[in-house]
Length: 102
Image (cartoon, rainbow, N blue to C red; front, side):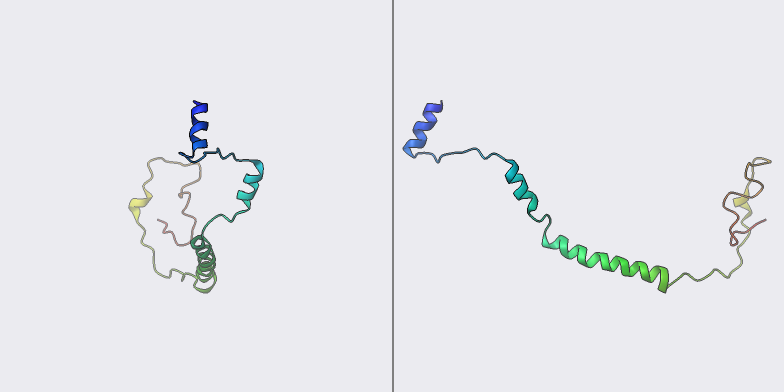
């Protein structure tokens, strides 16, 4: 079979096919190439500053207003089926000043 391939290649009927091997040098050349496209670069350079700007606006420039209304007692949310809990008579998250107590 190899002899037939060589004869056909010598006659010029088929182009010579060579195997391409990946070498360590070829891997080093490929790793030096930039990964990603122009769209990725533009996305990073536009979205990162935008995200930082939104964060700064949300945290420092526009803080949330304090709640000034009266919180209804919501007795249906304070149903206690046991007489005692390890954390006491209030719920675990009812120490906040805005949470209604009964």
